[in-house]
Length: 301
Image (tube, rainbow, N blue to C red):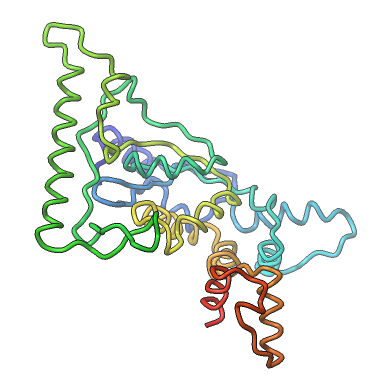
C-alpha cells in the first residue's frame, strides 16, 4: 500500500484531532475512519465519511407508515422484512464515502456501477506515479476454456515467469516513455492529457467514491461474488468488512437474502414443487433450456 506523505499527514492530523458531534454515529464504522485498508500490491480502501446506521434505515421506513399504522417493533426484524421484500428507499438513507486506490482496469469495471458520485485523480493535471499492479504468482491464470470472461488453471514454472517478466518490463518501459514525453528538456514536452495514452491499464489511479447503502449492496452482490474477477473482488471483500461493522443488522440481512440466496424462475419453482411431490422431472419435461436446467440442478444438488 502506498499513501503519499501528504495523505498520511492528513490522516494523522484528522485522527489526532477528534471532533464532538450531535449527529448519530456508528461505533463500528468510527473505527474505520481515516484507516487505509491495504488491497492488492499498491492499492487501498479507506472510509472518508459516512451517514446513518441501522436505526436510520428503520426510522425512514417507519416514517413512511404514517400515523396509526402498525409498526414492527424489532429493528432487526424490520430490516430483514425490508430486505426480503426488496424495499430500497430506507437503505438509501445511509451513505458511505470511500477513498480508493486501484488499477485503471479495475476502475473501468467499477465505474460501470453508475449509481455513485465519483471524483478521480486527474492525469490531465497531475503526473501519475510509477506504480503498477503486478499479480502474485498464484493469480497468474490461463484463459478458461469454458468461460470466455473467466480464468482457468494457474500458470506454472517457466510460463508463469515469462508472463511476469513481460508485465514488469512493459510497465517499466511505458512509464519511462511517459516520463520522456512529458519532460521539458529545454522544450515544452507533450501535454499530460496526451502523454497518458501511452500508459498501461495496470497503472494505479485514485478516486473518491460516494454511494448510498442500497446501491452499495448491489455493487457488493456482484463484485464480492465468487465469480467476480479477483482484482475487484478483493476490494469488495474489504468493503464488506467495513459495512458489516457499520450496519450489522442490514449487512446480515444482505448476506441472507442477497449473497446467500438464489433466484428461481417460475419454471424452476414449478419443477421443485413437482419433485417434492415425488414426480420425476427431466430437462425435457421442465420447460427449461439446457443451461437453465444445469443451473437449477446446481442449486438443488
